[in-house]
Image 1 (cartoon, rainbow, N blue to C red):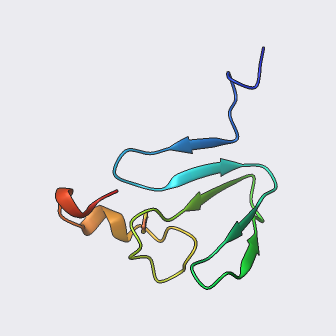
Image 2 (cartoon, rainbow, N blue to C red):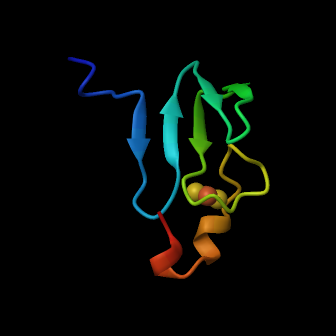
Length: 67
Ligand code: FES
């Protein structure tokens, strides 16, 4: 089994980037945020109120506004 079978990052079409394991994510202001869960969802739509994490807001966006 290789890393390709269990990647650290998986992009959800129209939604977040799911990160597995320990990582540091930098927000738009350059502040680092360490992951604290086994799997963390990173916002890709830019509309989450919990940046850089996904809060589910992408689900209510029109399809053309989703990442
Ligand atoms: S991707 Fe889910 S709120 Fe942005």
